[in-house]
Image (cartoon, rainbow, N blue to C red; front, side, top):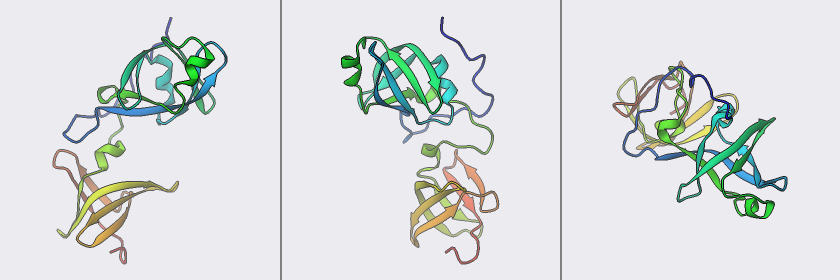
Length: 184
C-alpha cells in the first residue's frame, strides 16, 4: 500500500497561463539501482517528500506516462520502481531521462514564493516607471536568487530581496523593483 500525504501543503496553487510548461521536472534518472528494475533519481524539487506518494510520472521529452510501483527517499536521492522495467538492463535504458509531473500537481507555495517558470518572462519596472525589460533567467547564488532582466538598458541583475523586489503581479505579468544605487 502506498503511503499518502494527508494534504499537499497549504498555500498558493499555480494557475496555468500561456507560456507555462505543461510538465515540470522533479527528478533525473541517474542509474539503475539493484537488479530488479529500480532506478536512482536525482531530486530536482524542493519537495522531496512528493516522491513518497508519487503514483505516475511522465518521462522524457515526449512525457510518456509511467506508473510508479514503489518509491522511497534515501538521503539526497530517490529510488523508484517504474512499471514495465523489471531488470537492471531495462532500467539502464532510462538513464538521463527527466521525471516530470503535470503543472497541476505542483506543490502549493507560500505567499511570496514562486516557481522559476512564473518569474521568467515577467516585465520588470522600477517604482519610478522605468522599464528594465523581461526576466530571462534566474541565477541561484546560494545567498539569494538573482533575476536577470534583458531590455533597453541591456542586462540588469536584480537581487531577489524584499527591499529590492517590491511586488510581483502574476496576473499582470509584472515585477516592480527598487534598485539599489549603482545597480543600473
